[in-house]
Amino acid sequence: MALMKINFPRLQNTIETLAAIGRSDADHGLYRMAFSENDLQARDWLKSQIEAAGLEYFQDEAANIHARLNWDGKRASVMTGSHLDTVPGAGHLDGALGVLAGLECLRCLKEQGVDLKLPLESVAFTDEEGRFGGMLGSQAMSGRLTPELIHNAKDLDGHMLSEVMTHLGMPPLNILRARRQPESIHAFVELHIEQGPVLEQQRMCIGVVDAIAGLVRWNIRLLGEANHAGTTPMNMRKDPLQGFAEVAAALARILEENGSPRSTATIGYVNCFPGAANVVPGRVEFSLDMRDTDMQVLDDLAQAFRKSISAIARRRDLMFEYDEVSRLQAAACDSGIVDCIGKVCREFGYHSMQMHSGAAHDSMMMAGITRTAMIFVPSMAGRSHSPAEWTPWEEIEKGSNVLLNTLYRLASEAA
Ligand SMILES: [Zn+2]
Image 1 (cartoon, protein in one colour):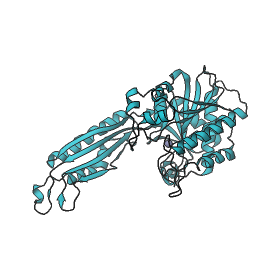
Image 2 (tube, helix red, strand yellow):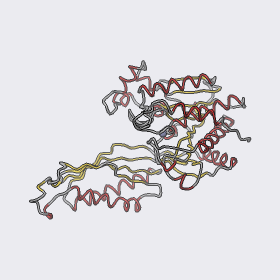
Image 3 (tube, protein in one colour):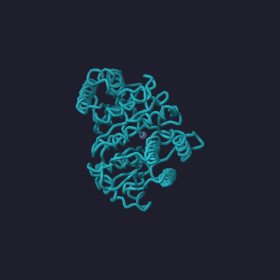
Image 4 (cartoon, helix red, strand yellow):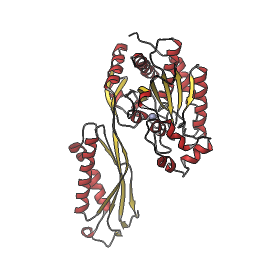
């Protein structure tokens, strides 16, 4: 099959234009929180781009924005997409790249008038970054939301999702209607920056994602006895911070003995109470984030942590409590699409490698209803969720060319 190329100057121009929406003068970072003024401005701009390109514009009940080519509502579509919303102090590529490269691919296919067996859709998913829990739009599309989840969704400032949507004229419970039937989607492919250092370190320009890691996150409490730092002898203390230090020191060993090469474990938050220099701590709270692409490995790992922390607490006369605060199922990518992406890379002569995604993406949700894969491009120095986020333009061009040809091949398959 012949190789096609995107219109790179046009893509570069749209990336630069979107990068100016929601930019703060203070840290030069972007902030387009879902449903904020900046997000709404980006949505309006995207709508104008879709219409100017002569593509069909559609917004579903979860506020996901679709650009559509050859849409007839009957045949399954080949779908691509990512998100427009960002974390505070964000870079210009996380999410935006997948949305704008998707739009560019549809534009190219329309202009070149190629024969497509299936319609194409490029989607900007609502609230991927988690103002209201994360991956809201793709959860809606893949049928994971319930009325209860929608009613209870609240941001850190206490704003309810239902109020925010009602204010914008969108009935919140209608989000459930954004659900797509699996038969209505032929395949889903997302182009995204890696947000890690692996591709750059391996000198690869494309990462072909074969799995997205699942996650288990705990809030842990070690309870001892707060007491006077001067009068309590060392051998008569119940000091949970000493217990915590032992857990933190054992983390790498527990991971090595019970995890896979793809496992990670992170303590990202710790707080000590009452938190005074002259008081033996009485309570330590900390988080534990565990990830792997295999849920069985992940559950075994969590079990090993539970046993180790219990043993440490017992030895030090501490109480150990934990709550599971998050659980995301790992998602396997479709081997057929993974092969197709690899083949396109070889035909272009782009250096590529298979890898997994340690970060969650909309693809994780889409994998629940359709065959799915992701294309990664390198993140310089592995930086993301930061104004330092950067991918060289030539790598963006390569990644977008791979997306274009993958979508074209998928849309040329017999339904
Ligand atoms: Zn993202």
